[in-house]
Image (tube, rainbow, N blue to C red):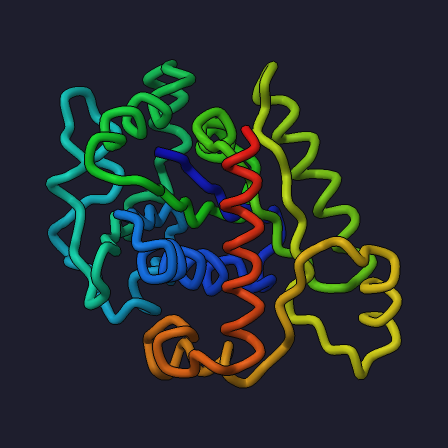
Length: 243
C-alpha cells in the first residue's frame, strides 16, 4: 500500500479536482483498491464524486481512540474507489490532534487501512497545522499543484519546509503545473523554467468535473486534460516503484 498527499498551502489551485482525478486513475487505470480520504472541510471531493455529505456523520470521529475508519467509508459509483468523507466538524481536527498529543495518529490509521486498500490519496486542507504535519508523516509522496504565478514559488517553498519538517526520511515532492494556459506569456515562461514538471492544462473539461460530478476521465476520456492526468498518475506510480 502507498499513500499520496495532494497538498497546497494556497486555495484555488485545483487541489481537490486533481485529488479526485488521481484517485479515479488509481482505481480505473491501475485497477487498484483506492481510498480517497477527504481532509478538507469544504468536502469538495465528495461533491465531485456525486456523494452528498451525511449530516449525522462526524469526519473527525475517525481520529478518536478505538475508532474504525472503515465505518465512515462510502462507496462511490466507480469500481475500486471509496471515499472517506469530510464535513464541517473537521475544522476543529487540528486542535483535537494537538490535545491528543499523538504525532503519528494518522499514520497509525493508514497502517490499519493497508489491508483493505492499495492506494490512499489525501485531499489535504490548504493550511499549515497539525493535520498537514500528520499527513506528511503518513504520505509516501506529496503532489503539489502550482498554477503559474509568482506566488506559486512561495507556496512551493512553504510546502517543502513543511515536508522537511516531518522528520528524517520525508516523502518526495512532485510539483505539478496546474491550470496551465500556454497562450499566456507568464505560463509559457513557467513551463520553460520547469520543463520536467508534469502539467495539467487549463481546460473546460476540468471545469466540467463540478458540473458532471465525475472525474474528467469518466466523461471526457480523450480530452487533453484526461490524458495529462493519466500521465501524471503514471509518473506517480513510477516514483512509488522507485522507493
